[in-house]
Image 1: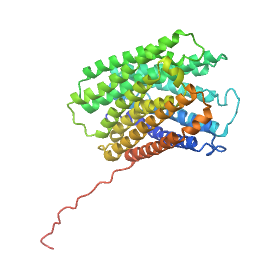
Image 2 (image 1 turned 90 degrees about the vertical axis):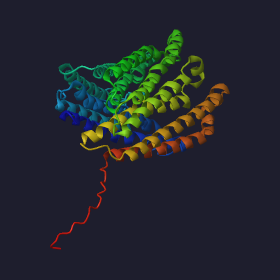
Image 3 (image 1 turned 60 degrees about the vertical axis):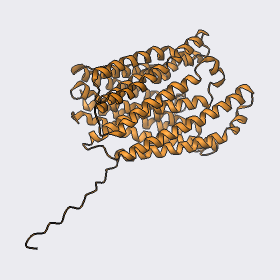
Image 4 (image 1 turned 90 degrees about the horizontal axis):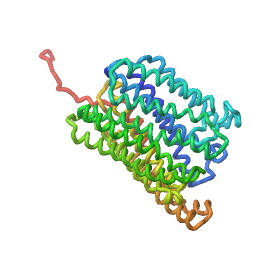
Amino acid sequence: MKYQTQKIAYAYFLVAMILFAVQVSMGLILGWIYVSPNFLSEILPFNVGRMLHTNSLIVWLLLGFFGAAYYLVPEEAEREIHSPKLAYLQLLILIVGTAGVVVTYLFNLFDGNFLLGNEGREFIEQPRWVKVGIVVAALIFLYNVTMTVLAGKKTAITNILLLGLWLLSLLFLFAFYNPANLALDKQYWWFIVHLWVEATWELVMASILAFLMLKLTGVDREVIEKWLYVIVATALFSGILGTGHHYYWIGMPGYWQWIGSIFSTLEVVPFFGMMAFAFVMVWKGRRDHPNKAALLWALGCATLAFFGAGVWGFLHTLHGVNYYTHGTQITAAHGHLAFFGAYVALNLAIITYAFPILKGRDPYNQVLNMASFWLMAGGMVFMTFTLTFAGTVQTHLQRVNGEFYMDVQDQLWVFYVMRFGSGVAVVLGALLFIYAVLAPRREVIEPGPVITTAAE
């Protein structure tokens, strides 16, 4: 560890992994509810469980991004973080807000209250006081890392990272705007949800992936930066107008069907670019880095992101296809693999790389770490195929044949059982990852030769 303030990342990564365990465990419970709908129905209603599942996903990914920034910015800027105290204050605010959200959701507190109650808008259900806390935490973070970068060395990696983090923070301000008109509400709601995961988060992903490639492969910085700028340009070019694929059926003008279809097909390009970038950097690399697990996660991230976000997104993004598939299990298939590949694997890659350095030891438990990758990746890929087949059957029976929704759900039971099985593999992989990263390695001490003295 070159800079003392890099240890701030350790605290962020720890909290992120706790929420990661909560998120996948809640996902497993929801998967079983699809098989047995009355499971925990009175204790944990499905809508509450889903809020906890999706919200914990978003929060732990953001914590991972913040931790990654606090780790890589000192190295890139070649100076300590501007204010460690502010960084820990930011983490405390986020922890308090998360705890408040969980209690509010679980016990349905302050229902209907403007300031304290659950707002009810998907992914941004947080009470307004929590949203205010998130904005304060984001402002603290942006001030802290921006001051660090301005006072130090500027690189393409920090420039792109800051651009992505500034934009995602500014876009969150739309969470406070809730117009009465539903079409208008959805228009601005997608400014957050889509422009996060398919624009600004891609900038964060590209910069962190570039940092990992720089450290793991030893390729010249100039080569990595050229790739980075091309990927970022295509991500913003396709992602911003690609928002139109969410406007097909919400009451927006018809031209969005064409704009959304055309630019959404181009959203495959930056993800293909990231996959090609990762493999070309490893191929060109001159460094035999000891942390093979981090390299596996980085390559897995780029590959699964291409298939999950790129290929599976393309499958149902054209408006002629989306007319039938919109809101079916095909959407769930795309969402699960895209989030896992692009952002979950990215965070686990930077954690795998940074933890040994933060703890001052060589990479360890790498076999367990790599086993966790194959468990989680294999489980998620199987889940994606299962939900894709379920969505195909659902589309035909429900949207083409016109059968009732619940009658169709009964016929999808076998797919939900298989989805639950794949969820078990993902949870086991997540727990194995956390153990591999945190558990101390047992050193095997070889017995030395027996030395006898003349007196003996």
